[in-house]
Image 1 (tube, rainbow, N blue to C red):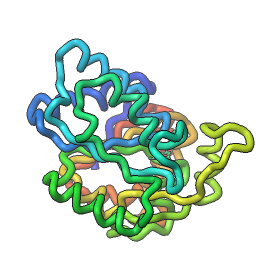
Image 2 (cartoon, rainbow, N blue to C red):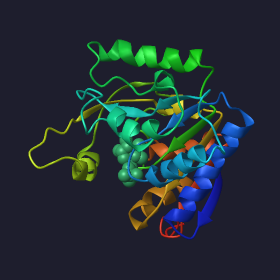
Image 3 (tube, helix red, strand yellow):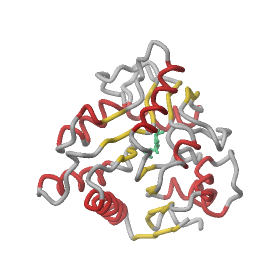
Length: 241
Ligand code: GLP
């Protein structure tokens, strides 16, 4: 695992967007693994700028998002499909039909998980996977205790993650407790993985990821097994290393 420690969140976003830009320049038909949460937003803004300046193109690219809330249709403002459309897809030259987010409103979620895995395989696998990290070390919605070889499946969210993400939901608004998420095995299959983390609140999770034992107690520690994983973190997130 390569660890890159930079001054602040802006430098982390810049470094991350340069990795994506380099990937698209080298291989315009890349399969990109994308993430939600607040951490990737600045990276997406950089990519939008580079795209609008004509430096990079997503016209031949495909994307697969890590996860989605189970029970929310893509039109729901709290769904991750909606987030991706707003934060990235609406502003770049990607063909929306080439963007994939697990279907939160699937009639048969278990079949939808199997289909998502098939779609990734048919696309040729993920070339570059973006990750954030939860305070408890989760990646995607692979909460602690997730199998280290798990595939896309329905996963229950922990109380901590529900509380952390409550800030995105209005008071009294329904907040799902279930998700569809790529598994840790699915993530490890990506050819390259880049995990971004910023701020003091992520320092303990980063320490467990880098220095802790390889353990389902910290799902991100599974990246210790990946041949081509890079952690791009700011000084605050690195403060417990
Ligand atoms: C959610 C997402 C994760 C993300 C995490 C951290 O739980 N499922 O993919 O990494 O939030 O989000 P943030 O970047 O807002 O701290």
